[in-house]
Image (cartoon, rainbow, N blue to C red; front, side, top):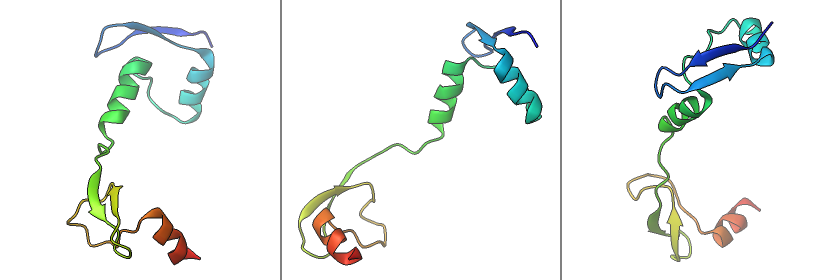
Length: 88
């Protein structure tokens, strides 16, 4: 199987699909990509939730901590020290 030259449908940049990729797509019965690797990665990252940090207080010792859980979540939030005490 030779490599295939393609043009990205998003950024119009040329990219190659190498022999190993072709074998993978054929084995998994997947369509060939229409976007270059960079645009595919950008698309995958767009589906991730953004990381936002919130100031909270530990539910045990009341120390101020940063967490990814917003204040309106029902979960107990512990600082690292209290968390390790909880799980041991």
